[in-house]
Amino acid sequence: MPEEARSYFTDIFTAVGNWHHEIFNWWDYRFTNAFTEWLNNGIRKVYDAGNGLSFEVLRFKLLYTKGTHT
Image (cartoon, rainbow, N blue to C red; front, side, top):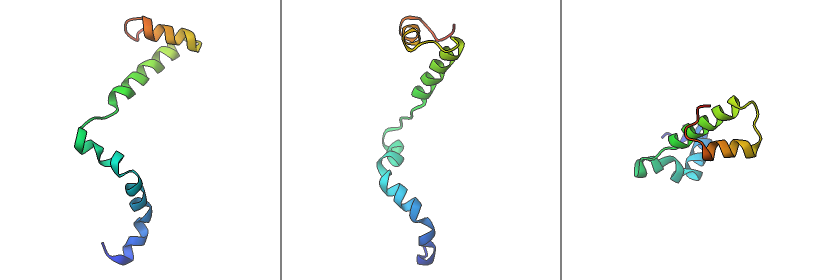
């Protein structure tokens, strides 16, 4: 990279330097957080369907019922 253009990319260089392991981990392990995102979406649907359930009731529904459809 030309030295005169380097100053425009200092934030990117810093971010990649700070998060190198997290950014390039995909090529080593091939895992994503897709399952976690899917699970969070299901929990959000149960919460929305319950019109603001309390934490205890939401927890019970998620732990002791089969599926997330209400």
